Image (cartoon, each protein chain N blue to C red):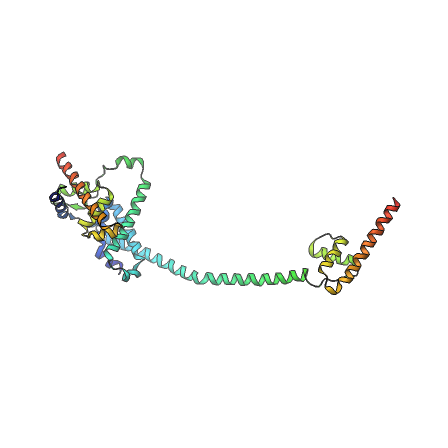
Length: 148
Length: 164
């Protein structure tokens, strides 16, 4: 490669002058940049505000959710784990259960539930009721067999 | 640094770089506008920048690369057929009237990296160290691109002269 030729070419290029920029380009470019800058600043302000507001909204939602869950929990506990009324008449209890749970409850299932949910002091009463029910069922079964 | 000050310092240099590299006055104006929009957003970081001119040209280069990529993706078959025939934007005034156009035409036919190295070195007066920093290459690579570009440019101008 000829170094002198390279220098000639570089000299030729350096001898070239660059033409002036189109008139009005400065204003056009700066106007667009300022407009964009203002839009960016507006967005920045909105983002800063949302940075403050969003955590507050989230905290409020969590607090509301916790409060609702707590009251829901209390209602569920009152329905399920609360003191179960040991009605003398099992029909009343069945009606009461059917009302809260929407079930159709047989007397065996009802007593089973009552055993599960009963307070320790009432367990003997419930077991007696269960024994009476089993005896009753057994006798009715025997009767039907003898009739047959 | 304010936008006005920035434009007064580097605006014309940036336009010439873009016009020579992209070969279109309209594209140069668009990319210059986009670059200033980008620069407007980083005004607060100016005190941290050691060499503002190299920094501005780095951003300018990224914007023009983005524009070239977009142009490449959007070009049609017709554009491909016309490729090489279109005259580059007339931003150069040579020692004689036809020389400027001939140089601009030869410059537009160089590979992009070599053309960029020549524009930055000869028309923008950057050192190879600055060119290397702007283009994200080593100093040797920047110098080699410039050297190869000059050799190719010489060959193109010679061929053009012989053709006449």
